[in-house]
Image (cartoon, rainbow, N blue to C red):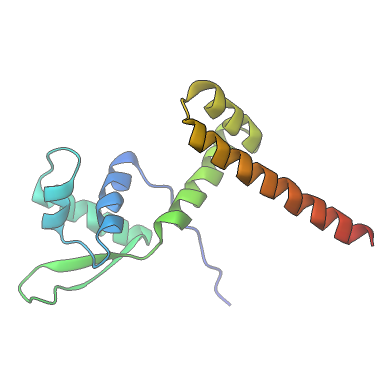
Length: 140
C-alpha cells in the first residue's frame, strides 16, 4: 500500500505560475505563463518553474495538441486543495495550530466589506450548528 504524500508548500513565484495554470482550464504553455505572469519573466524561467512544479506534483504535461515542441501543462492539484493545504500549514507553523488566532488577526488587520463579514458570519453560524448537531448525536 502506498501512502499519498502531500505536495510541498509553494514558493511565492510558484504560486504565481500556478495561478496562470489554474486560470487556464485547458492547460498552459510556458509562453502562456510568460504572457500572463504578473511581472516580466523569461521563457526559460517559466519553463523551468513549470518543470519544478511537475516534480513537486502540482502539474503534469503532455504534448501540445497543435503539435510542435510546445508542451501543455495542466494542474494536477485543484486550486482549492492547494489553498486548504497552505492554510493548514500556515496555521500549524505560525499560529501553533490555533486557527482562531489567524482569523482574529485577519479580522483586526484586514478591511472586509459588510457583505464579506455577513458571509463569514453565515459560515460561522453553519459551523456552530454543525458542531451542535454532532454533539447532540453523541449524547444519545
